[in-house]
Length: 429
Ligand SMILES: Cc1cc2nc3c(=O)[nH]c(=O)nc-3n(C[C@H](O)[C@H](O)[C@H](O)COP(=O)(O)OP(=O)(O)OC[C@H]3O[C@@H](n4cnc5c(N)ncnc54)[C@H](O)[C@@H]3O)c2cc1C
Ligand code: SF4
Image (cartoon, rainbow, N blue to C red; front, side, top):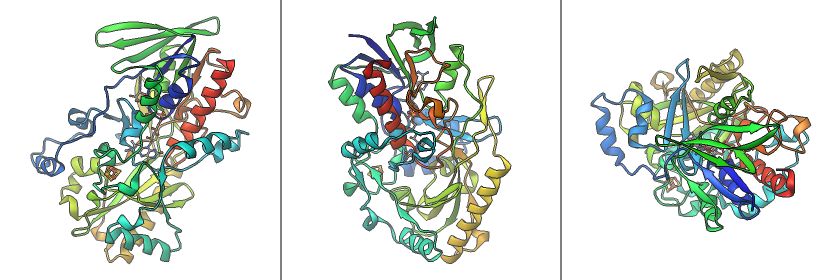
């Protein structure tokens, strides 16, 4: 059987691995370790904050290695998953189909989405679990004609314990993440190698021959008949660059800014994050307790149960890149305009809930949906293959998006990955 190497085990990688195993002998190279949720008692960490030793968001990796935090040159925090299951393990489980941009290129993923909805449990009946202030905010958004929509969640959320720890890894096995696909791939014979960081793809005469990966102090060689690169929006471009293949300076990240207030005993920290969302052109607004700001932002040194926060997530302009190994990403004038408009709306929501604008404080700008540096074009609508790549190398992650979704991308990445696996199984690999 031919060998396939899949690099990365998140949304795109795990789906490709599961779909390819059997037609290929699949080996998954994952840079991080086996995922473990953060089990630490958050009240103790809340106390630890007072020591002042938590001052840089990158420190989160000390206690929670599955969450990787980097900083851009301009100081924006970039969050991604670093372990089996990739960023899906630290997601909030939101499930939305978002392929308008792909449809505009002539890509029809109806079949793949139908398959996904048949296999991934999606639940939107969680409204009765919401805490009183969240219900109030939902009703205010309705009064303001913002058309708030209950967020469908991937997982068995009828049994969600409302612990609020989704982004730290669900300790109760409720939230779906791509480790379920990895398990299926492994049951069918695939090999998952954690702690294996792909460095470079070796290729000649238009064909990839294999992957060089670091494992501890060693460099290992993995020969391959097919390679699927799914190291994520920040992981894939450096591997391609090391392999002599240039990406485009079109990085988007979906920046997040939380607008917060003190609301006694609102206990948003112990509530399912992003229970509903307001969709506007260029951004969404959704209730979200921002753990990173809570631990590392001085403004947030208040009792966790008394903080209530609304997340603004931007669909940012796709302008950004790696310069000397560092991510360079700034907010454009258009991004700032959208952010300002969204912040005014949040202030109005809080105002209607009885909160004066002087009582508002902000979170640290962070982002967790990177992609766009190898964007699909209309010419690639059938092949999903960029001509810059060797014929047997495919990219299958958020790098393929032509523009930011400004919205949860996991389902759409998996739909693309399914299509790519079909193309590879059909002999195009
Ligand atoms: C806090 C947070 C909450 C989110 N919530 C949601 C949500 O509710 N719904 C939603 O749809 N999206 C959500 N997202 C975004 C979503 O999780 C990601 O966009 C998605 O998982 C990206 O899929 P991917 O396949 O591109 O990459 P990833 O899922 O990030 O997977 C990439 C994998 O590649 C590995 N890797 C990187 N470099 C290498 C290398 N050199 N060699 C080997 N392996 C490597 C990484 O360790 C990682 O496991 C959230 C993101 C964050 C940060
Ligand atoms: S709120 Fe808690 S139980 Fe519910 S999905 Fe999130 S982590 Fe799991």
